[in-house]
Image (cartoon, rainbow, N blue to C red; front, top):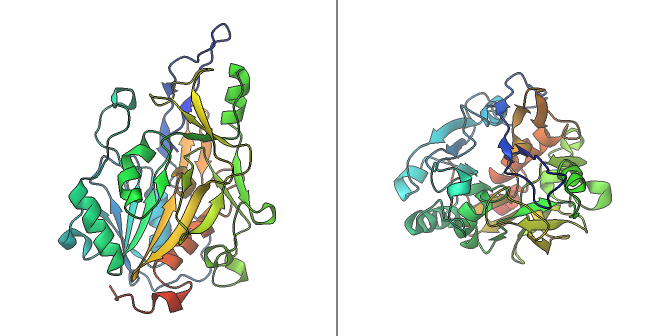
Length: 327
């Protein structure tokens, strides 16, 4: 999630244009990995997209994401070229986190949000997955969901270019409170669905709760396996400009929609996540509020991250990946 400070006008129905809050990577985060999946530097290659004006990069807000996977034995590298057969060939897992169509300010984007990927890149990625690659597509709330919607649609997934919220209230102060309410997906409440990714390789890797930070809601086809299911009562706020909300902002009920799902396609695998901060460690604002794996309620997000990587590389549910080529 790219979070902003909302400034509410008590006298007005609409909120003011929000000021951007500084988000910095927290590099001191180092959770325990009792049994790394691979020997150091000997695991599959994870390529992290940095060719599409990505808000999250390995030397920026996804520094901890990269370090976590490296400590688990993966080889992690940036991918700074456009997606094509030759560029994707060295990658076992392709991570795309909050791609953007340009470096322009979000307020300057046209509506609907343009795609961050060309038609040729989308075709190349789809062919690569079906041939045995693993895609990890992460796209946050508007305009980031819209920027990745064309790529998601190639796999039958429908991204919603809005803001997934616990509800809506005409009172600006109440809207602000809803915005800051944590979204918790729990096994015992049904939001975190049973799956090899949730169970892990053993009991010590099991995940009972995952926290996300706003993000989007999406829908997936019948061949997808749900991971994160939004509670009833959630809505997607649908402004024409990011962070421009008022009492007339369109909203769509999204209770029961997804914020995480996986699927198998041909010889490959794909994971779709509707929120990006859950895989990061960040601090925000002058008070350095934690946001990501380092935040309260997100204590098992790091294990969820590792389990996702294990599933994408075939360590979890390996029988279904027996035909995947080694890289």
